[in-house]
Length: 490
Ligand code: DMJ
Image 1: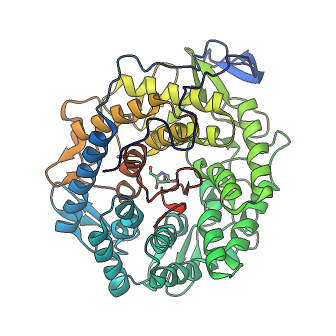
Image 2: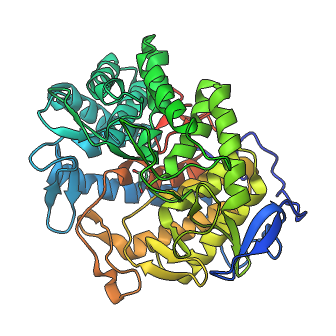
């Protein structure tokens, strides 16, 4: 184990102190009593610096080893009982087909590739590559969810190729992308259909959530770069243009769009929650990965609108509430999905450290309240509305992003707290599993290790604590599924 860095590599080691200067003006939301941020400050929000009082962690090399052990615990559970299937059922030892019953793409294998590489598990990685070469069949006669196939399979194979240099992985990524492309090219607007049959190219699904319309440019853009074939990148950009052209006068977007007519199918703007979340992540990520000014400009435009119309302060915490995309008026109850917690890191990566750090702090307050985060909160009182936990990675994803930017140990302390919560409550003899109720004794554990667990959750922790020489901490860029699309080092 190499000695770890006490601050994020390539950054100053001193803790940065954040300005409390007001950036946005405020009005009070009649529905919730929360404060809507207009064009100035964050009154009452503590933005730091933070001393992490009461949060202590072992040395980084000890934590890194704990993280690696837990990853291997989950991995060996999958290898032993569900090898070749999409997902493990770690309690019963069964398996789960992710895309459709009876069809498997060995999803956990594809998802794990670059994590195994980063952890130095080269024999396991070789075993995965051999399986992919021998068994992974892109041409199955099954309707596949386009968004999920892009971020998980195409992204996984592209990252795996960059980790190993195995040309067969790139060829397989391309084959998947070619079979997914009809979802984009058959659409009159360019907004992809939600599903495509991998054998016939038949498409279906015209009601498209924003995340599904705009989460492909990082994988497809990299594929275009690696193959010299512009069709993938062009398809993603056409979809983005179709959506952005339909923004309201407030520069807000609604949640769902019709692939064929281009009409909005609702008027709610739920940023950063599902079903829009990674749409914005890819505006920034695509801009950074591909040096694409258009994407970056769109990110800045839409993020300014989100801060102007959706940011609220409730009990001193920053949240983002759903609004009508045409009027900016609040829409629905004051809820926030755990999936939205990635937005703290995104804001910081996009240059707005103050709001990113404040939003992370809000989620840390929620983490302090529960052993593991519930799926959905009422943000006015942190009450768990959906009390389940799907073993999600968004909170440590933001911890990783903020730690890389600031070097502040607070993010490692809180990421470790998150890790202990997961290890203490969701570890079973066969691996790791989802929970039905984080407030109940025993959490009503379920029986599934989602494949993204092998791509994301412990990768962020490993990168924060291991100082692995296999990752370029300055220039590395990860996708929404945690795939390292740039920055894997030999
Ligand atoms: C992951 O599959 C990806 O991060 C996706 O963008 C949304 N979140 C899930 C895991 O929660």
